[in-house]
Image (cartoon, rainbow, N blue to C red):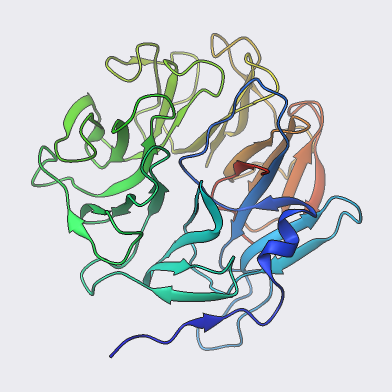
Length: 349
């Protein structure tokens, strides 16, 4: 029996796109040096006061910030387990989210949603739309990787080259310059495909899960990967070889990495134990930047708003913070008690 679409009773997403900054998760769009305005997305996950079986609170789901008023607006359906968000670069009315229930697709800018995955492809970790072939959608799963060639209507497993044990995939990062090429962050390392996921090969074996992989918006050969307890790694040959970043902590989890699209020298990472660390020399040296954050902050995600260079940090059981001096000082913002899964930017059409 087909699953009926879930309708958004709050607002039409298309009206929000022109109104300001938005928060969520996305792959497939590139940031360039050209003067382009962006919308900025996040999804807020389960509130610290949420109780299973209770009414879902409004600090979960997808949010938009109005640039004029500064207020945060909820849009899309309300779900406490959204892990990723991606857009079709040809048509921003087509968007995908992954949740613990599966992958959901909207064809009308977020007004209605329909689950598109099969029963064995739940608990999606990440979703990415191919920037060169937008009908192709990649799905990261605890059990491996799936690909759709028809906008998510049907799915096929594409795991040749992944280890029999250790297929857990946390992140899919598609090359913004080279077609059919991408990297997957898995339980046993970083895996590279050059043929649209038909085959994978390990380019960085790790002892723990790779939590995030990002390509520099300034230099497509520069990638950074971060792991649970195996530190952070960098590649300067488009993911073919990797070196560990020596002056970042590696005993505890690093959850994500972000590049500043306004400054090629700026990067930041989020650490569960060590808070926020930033680099202002292209990753050569790193500095702890926790002044103004709660004591011993457990930082879940960091992201940079590409129009202004403002740095955001989501702190576990606290709130969303922002910094206009790249981490030297912090100010509380909004979404108290919620966790944010990744910050991503989309060029405004």
